[in-house]
Amino acid sequence: MSGTSPSVAAGAGQLPGTGRTAVVTGASSGIGAATARRLAAEGFDVVVGARRLNRLEALAASIGGRALPLDVTEPASVAAFTAALDRVDVLVNNAGGAFDAAPVAEADLDSWARTYEVNVLGTVRLTKALLPKLRASGAGDVLFVGSTAGLVSYEGGASYTAAKHGVHTLAETLRLELCGEPVRVIETAPGMVRTEEFSLNRTGSQERADAVYRGVREPLVAEDVADCIAWALTRPHHVNVDLLVVRPRAQAAQHKVHRDPPDRTAAR
Image (cartoon, rainbow, N blue to C red; front, side, top):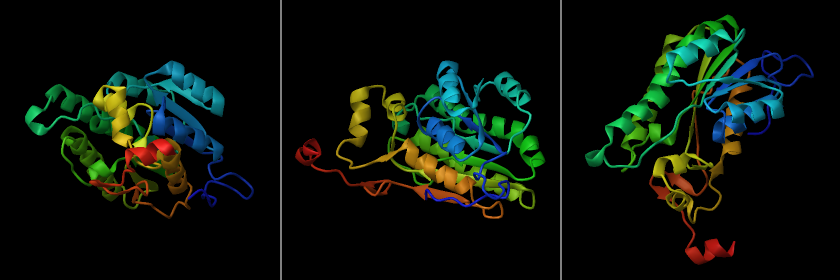
């Protein structure tokens, strides 16, 4: 998917994103940071938003982008972020996360509320705020970084799967509501992706986080997902990639993951 063709915004000899401004949320690490780097390489003017401004500023400096503080769970933060932007052509809704792996019978409702607030309400809050600018661009894109957890449920994942199902139906509904307008709605749904923080935040320990990927040969990494996001965003604007599901070859389905025996894994 690394090959791209010029978008409608790009002229002959230009990179596909030239002249377009892309906002990437949750860009301080993982998929968000990788996406910001990839879109900058595609020629987009990239604005990165997250709570950890020190990380954002380092990333922005490395890609020639702009860093702005953003907490999608805080209305005042979203309002200030929106007011600081003159133009938005692309919104990559990446901010999110999972914060527990408890069964429903042991549900921590505070964790459920946090998961829903970040993944769903925060995404709605920022999308609503930036839609006027996306419409005004004449060729806007709203891309939701969802998950296969938004398509298939599994034990121990109810707080996260419920939230990501919410993101999935949010994308579907918005696409219906914007039909006929110059704004595409795209959803990318990754499966198993090994990043530095996702499983650590979810399990609370590095040992348990490492166990999630133990024996899995070549799980996806953040750059793989960023490649898919860049590909979808650089299609000609009449082409809408509604839903792009991407998994590592070792993961055939949510419950079907091939793991090498310990001796083979250690030998590699």
